[in-house]
Length: 235
Ligand code: IPE
Ligand code: IPE
Ligand code: MG
Image 1 (cartoon, rainbow, N blue to C red):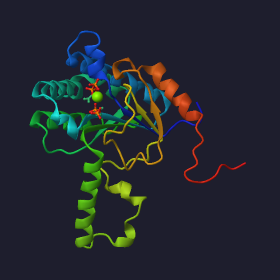
Image 2 (cartoon, rainbow, N blue to C red):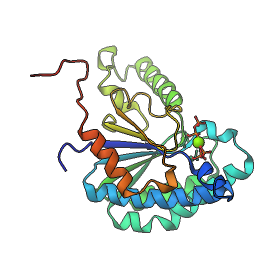
Image 3 (spheres, rainbow, N blue to C red):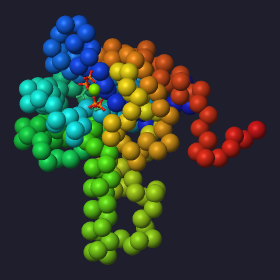
Image 4 (cartoon, rainbow, N blue to C red):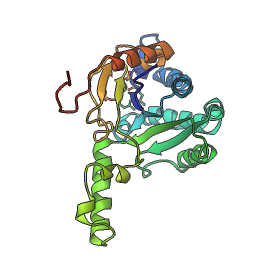
């Protein structure tokens, strides 16, 4: 496939509605969603996508019931500790973006363990946005930069829109294709800096049903876009 996006991001939405519409508990939707993520990460690697960022849990998702939050945290632990074995064998490197405060110790340990287990993989980078907020990330960068400027570690001249990426939770290329599943057409505080020129793809499909074919469709959509970055089309 030519003109492949370098960095694909997915707002994995619709797990709850997928379950409710089937008369199941919301947790069943999250379980299915996790299986979908496993498949997509391997598929993205096979396709040659370099970076896949996924929105797994937002800082605002803590507003949900303790029952749902705890279910999600327990599910993540199982995935990071055991279930991701196939993903890991497929040479996927896993990193996290987000705040570490507010997270349970056992969750932090599981995150740490999967990061370590995959640190030498170099197939595809799976950036899991976890306890993540786009505004929070920019505020955290601002604080980090303010400190470095104050301590003369960097000069004002060195702060610009390109090396700003170095200060984000992970230094990644900008997002080329941003997918949101599950009918809504909003960013919900996801990767605001990195998405500035992303092509946006919305689909009604709930995340648990978003399979390899659905990702192919999104990639086809991307290939038809004319990205101008403010310039005019060259004829
Ligand atoms: C996305 O699915 C997963 C998380 C936010 C953790 P939702 O749980 O938001 O599913 P809906 O939007 O309620 O269907
Ligand atoms: C965004 O989905 C967060 C994740 C997919 C993890 P939400 O379901 O939390 O977003 P809103 O509430 O519909 O904006
Ligand atoms: Mg939702």
